[in-house]
Every structure is written in C-alpha cells, then in structure tokens.
Image (cartoon, rainbow, N blue to C red; front, side):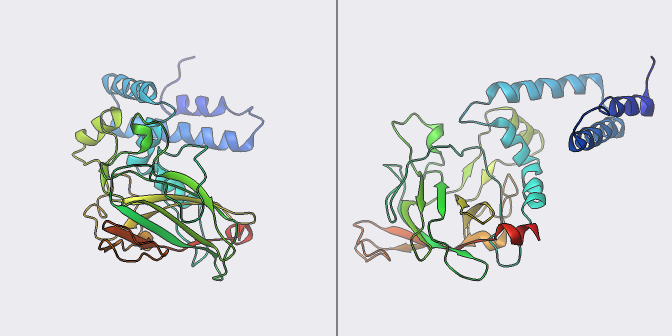
Length: 290
C-alpha cells in the first residue's frame, strides 16, 4: 500500500477506529491530524525529525523521580498553563490555578499550625499565613494545605543532597480556616536549564527565570482541588515568567519587619523577617461542574 499525504493521515486515524474508548479515539485522531498538519506546514526535513527524536530521547533520559524534564518542557511551551485553564474553570471569587511545576514530592512532613518548615534552608525567615475559604467567604476547617518552595539560593530541596525536606510540608486548617507556617522568603530563580529544555530556551533567545513564589495545593472534601502559587509583588520577572504561570490575582505583598518586632503569631524574631498573608478560596465540586 503506497500511502502519502492526506491518504496517509486518514489511514493512521482509521487505525485507531477499533479502540473501545470513544475518548481515546477522539484524542488520538486529533493528535495524528494536527501532528501531520504541523509537519506539512513547516515542511519538516528528515534531519529536523531526527533532531526532535534525539531531543525527546534526552528529555526522557534526564528525567528522574525528582526532576521531570517533560513537565518542564510542557511548562516552557505553555502547554501546562493551557491545560490548567481548560481543566480549572472556576466561579468568580475562587482562587485561580496555575502550573503544578516539576518539584512536588508526595509524602511531605506534617507541620503543626505555625510551625517552621524551613528546616535550616538558607534565607530570611518568612511567616506565611491566611485562611482557606469557600466562595461565600466561609472558613473551611480541616482543609489539607501542601506547600513547597525554593530557598534563597533558588534551589528546591530535591535539587540538593540533604538529610531531610526543606521548605516542604503539609498542614491542616483550624476551625476558622486558618493556615500559618514559617518558611524563608522566596526568591526568583532559573528553572533547570542544564538539559534539553535549557537548549530549547537558548535556541529561542529566551531566559530561564521564574519570579519568586510559593507553591500551594489545597484539598477538602466536597471541594475541587486547588493548585496555585503566591507570587511576590515587585519581582522583576513577573512579566517574563519562563513558564507563563503568573496571574495578577496571585500576586501578594511580602512585608519586611525589623528584628525584635512582634510577628502576627506573637513571636519576636531576633533577625529581620518577612510576612505575607493570602487567602485561598476553594470552589465546591458542584460549582466547578456548573
């Protein structure tokens, strides 16, 4: 069978026709059509094809349990944020979602309300607090709040050889929906650019920087899961985030305080520290479906 052009595309699409899953047929058929259309549009050469295969092979080879280069690739191509937008349509008032990122780790340590999750990470102390609320402004008690972030050197704990987690933990909200913990003030940092994704960025004349942020994942029974960041106001990379994750509503002020002044939790740090307060608003499952 000598198949070329549109006949080849049609034959490949038809080859998935016996799948028992309607959704699988829909997705794979669209993938084939768009992939073939892309190759035709750019008149893809064999050398370019093999370069792409090599790029994807090396992307897989560098990926590990703590470094997901394919997630990073999806991030810098904007696919992650596009998928976030498609899959997280929320009612007005709910906190907006953003990219998950490649550095989440299951099984983070539990910390009590007001505990310190930095575990010796370098950086200026920062008290992070707020409430988990529903769209009516009512508190959500016992919500699970997972958080993770980089230190002042721009590294996540999984990027270093450490005895235990740093700036990574989970806690539950109290009866009034409060969450509160000490970490370090986040800083802007470059995404890992020593692999294939870094090559892609340099070839495109793009930078690897992400603005300072804290990751949150919040879950509660009856509510849609929230995956988001809180970004530091005034960061120079807010408009050029390498993974396109910034949303205006997710930007908050990090306020510096001198040593010896009382913090909102009643403690008196003996060094300068920061505070940031941000309420995380969840939509119910029903609201999200509607």
